[in-house]
Amino acid sequence: MNAPANRTAIRNAEANIIIVDAARSVIAERGLAGMSLRTVAEQAEMSVGSISYRIGDRAALITAVTAREIDLADALACDFLARLDGIEPVAAGLLPDLVGAWLDLMAGEQRISAIVTCELALLASRVPETVSDVPRLLDRSATMWRTMLQASPDGARLADAISAYCLDERPFTIALSDIADYRLLRQSTIRALLRDPGEAPAPAASQWHMMLVDRLAVPSADALDAADIVPQGAKATLADHIADLIVADGVGALSHRAVAQVSGMAASSVAHHFPTHRDIVFGGVEAIYRRMRADIWGSNGTAPGNGTIIQLTHDSALLANRNPAFLPFAIDMRRRRAENVHVQVAQWIGVPVDGDRARVQAIVVALIGHGLEILARGALVEPFPDMSRYFSRSEQSS
Image (cartoon, rainbow, N blue to C red; front, side, top):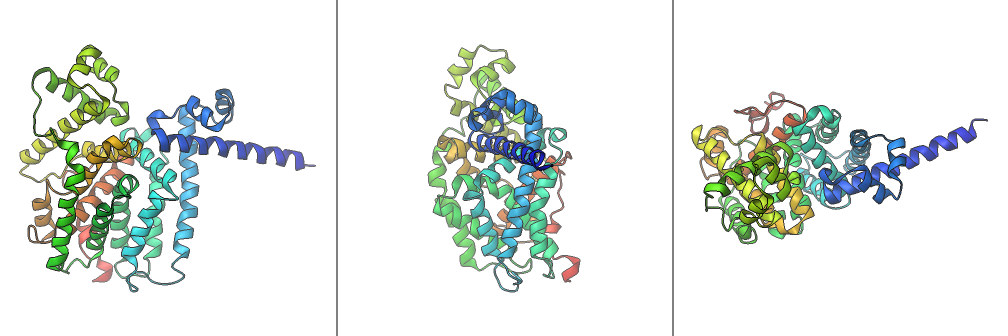
């Protein structure tokens, strides 16, 4: 008797999944800024009215996408954990391979989910009340690593460090995975993150790490060919307005029209100083970096950055994924992850300055990921973060 009703419910559920998956595809291709009921309708080959009837407005669609990503993350975690088949990864020396493989999944078969998760995390970091389920989504990865490492004496610390590290590394892996030097730098950083806190690196390993950083300076050179030229006059004023736009709404909100509106200048004046979209982005990014450097110098080097920089790094990597013209900038952002604060971070974690640059970079990457998670939960990033959870052995292992 209930068979027709059940079939109808199944068809409705399948149609909803088609809509949500279409939205995920649009986000992966265009970013959240490019997702609307119209663009999703085009992707799903449905009418806007049908999507509105079945799902609701854009906010309801984002909520549905988040729920879908949570389900997919649970399935992925189960599949990934099954690969261990009872083997303890730390004792077996497998953990660096597993972390690298997990990130490779994000750039490969899980690319759509990886990009969507990055976009949702960024949205939550700016307006957490609009996507309240995003922290649950981010927790899925952390839970997987804790489950994997529950038998390890130092498993809790390692799981927290890996989860935070992967959250920040993810968008760069998506954008830069085709670059061999990036993959080698990433693996060097992963090994440093997972190394015993009391273990010093081999001198050759440190030399290797910095050689990779230097090698990546070549493909990133185009990004900052005019970075040392500080704009003056109207161009400087516009750059600050662009920076404010990025801080408020992200790189995806930038256009000549948007900058003209917030600056009170004509669009033609904006185009005179920043002819292309690429020029606008770089102008605003450099203005933000100048602010960051001023903050660091003003605090005597004790502040490694703020929420704006955390969001900017993810924005930049995601933009490079959509537009190859921005790849040089993403490369530069990733390669100099700890350059501005490596002296201070080395002192904080108690290693000689320049003695373990890979570990310093690993800690900074983990801190940025940790900071994004804090922002996504609606809290403020701590000006003096507690890094002991990443570089000190837990009480459980002492």
